[in-house]
Image (tube, rainbow, N blue to C red; front, side, top):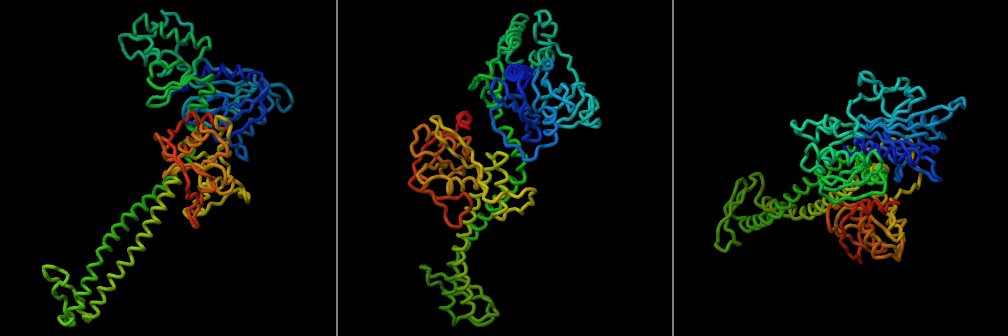
Length: 566
């Protein structure tokens, strides 16, 4: 993982510089594994995020906004009791491990000054955040660990805090060349793996960078490359950087060994905000919407099968002309048929060569009734084509609607999910669930707000409820509406009649980014005035028609979206 010991060191140093001496004013727990501390320091408020998310554990100052639950979890209420109003004494890293201790000076129930420590362990699925008292006893934690799960240590309220097992590695700082070479066996090979195993805080990413800078690794080049990088770390000279290649990588040192587009940042927190932008939300949404995604995918497959079956039936119905032919030939040759005949062979007057046709008969019916039976089959097949074609159109509309919902799930934030569920309940796709809190009448959907380079406000609807509210109720008729051309996506509105060409391109970028074509290039985006957008009577939620549009082509740029987010 990229959040290694050196990134942890940089975060601890940066947050300590910014927050030391600051006062904790508010504490939130937006999600089960995430904490947000609002700290007043240096004359402004800072948000410190501590996440024990199994996939995206991290600690850093964030500029992101989080929706907080109406009822705070128990751990959040405990933190408020012990830490609100407290002063941050120090933020430090434990040796070179991915463990950060935040020490607070606070008052206890009797009003006496005491010490509290918040421990953040950033260790993948074993990540945790714990609150300790002055005697290092655990007051509570985000995740509990019973003795039956871990024999080395118990993480439960009332237990003494025990640090994770020591790895007994050598510190990479202030290391002589001789001491460095003692840890490396050049004959054993796999020198990068040896660096990871021998020195604390060294990840495979940093080890690969050391190897790359050493070139041909020898007893002189390898120690020098190692010393040069860790000398910078020791003096807190960091280069926050993200590199885009086959996957995204980040570090606090220049990653010269990776070929790709590199992006530098002013601070480690800015880097982490950008790298994790949307990732944890998408991971959360995926976990919460597995059932919805499976249901929508199954419904889509059903409709695809239905279209195939209906198309096959239409092909069969189109061959109904033969029934008309048989009925006419039978009527013309009625004198040749007697009741009880199973078949009759007659001349085909429509055949230029004068061939014959064998007509199957129902022995129980008269010749006239047999002829009428063929005419009925012809009329039934002819009339069914219109009905079948209508059903195919409806099935295609259903597929388009389901595609729209699947796209909305892929770009939804956690607060968008409930509105998508409500829509499916209202449309009769899923059963209505009982909710603890009733939704307020006339409550308005929350829209995502962005700001273009020149300061123009741009609104984005990320599900059908938001799209309908934005387009049909909120937007003025003279404002500009955008949507990807013939591709499921969001409704986007520029909240200004007079806007620059740059604002139009940025709004189009939003429309392309929040669509099914997010990963594509040169995505067609239509734009027109809101007055030209109409919802047909009886149409599915979010479906509109529009005219007088122009089209432009853009390639979605996540960096641009991140900069525009308000």
